Image (cartoon, rainbow, N blue to C red; front, side, top):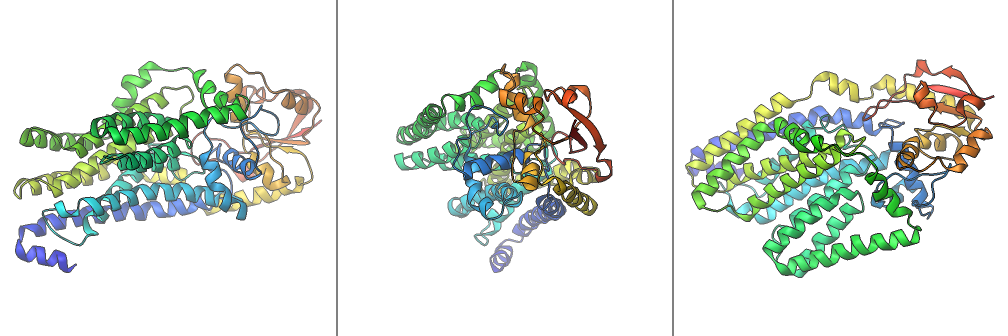
Length: 513
């Protein structure tokens, strides 16, 4: 604090800038405070927050047992169409405490980690450039908090996915870490480090390839030595490792991470212009403020510094990745995460530069503009209360979920199928099975329903089936359901539901005839 007081004594005009930045920080604290109860309630919810969470947990169990998850699909297991690093990272803590808690914590820590990365990046590289000298922690804290708080405002816009036991948040952390590592890379070693981080992103989710391409083009522009390190590392860790994985899985690895996606229809109108327009409409004020500042810098200096260019490229790459993912059949709004996050990163970066650079007369003007835009955007985009209620399990929901699990434990000695929630089967009986979404994925690619599933259903191997949805279209997804099973109960009283993504919940009990 004494640093700030000294600067105000030297120049009373500095008080206005410091007050504005402190106001921005206070606004971020309000946002954090609003979201803490939501994250706590969702973190401790004992069932799936989203319909694929339980399937992800069965993947973690598979790899913890040393199994190759990319294999011929069957009644016991069908993998999702993602690369596997998230599952392996979760194994140690999940083995100690099986459940949703640690996989969700990995996601929450990953998102928090992006802010921490920005904090240390600013602290270590840019403190000396700020016109108003304060504590080493003052500016990094404000801008890293601004990035995280703006991203939280988009929690519902991006599908309420970033705290789930899913791959998205860990992927984002690795992409951001690998990207900021390559900004100043001018040697072989830094290229290798960036390549390792971006390869980790690829092995978490395949869409990291967009950012690997951008990083490669950037490193060619900056340093051939850095490019060489990046290229060799990603070629080995992504390219060669994919070939090895594919060889030892008899070709199934490539089928799941690529062939399935190729069979999905692609909407070119969603790719362009629908998704870019959707993103730019939401971030119009932020993008306008960043563009205005970059234009000012270009007019003043006749050139943009490489940091501004890089974060602009990152934003465009994020839009490219989001547009491609959203245009793919059955995409969810979590596909908007890269576009959202990296547009926000561009805004926070230019906000930071407006404070750090320029002459003493114009810098406070841009500081005021950016702060005003930040507060207005927060006010306009702050989620409505009904969204918090819709996506936050309340106390009664927690109690009902626990009672529902207790009720199902009467079937602990039975062979039970819960097609959309295989981890629930595991909690009850110690055995899990395929996930219906993964089954639908492989059937959409042209593959027939695996024989083992046909045999299990035809021979009534499952004593009970707990289905999520009612209606012929859903029941026909399971062969022999109509012929061999009878609907005996509706779990209406438990009001079981998911809180993100596709709305579903274990509602209907079928018994073997």
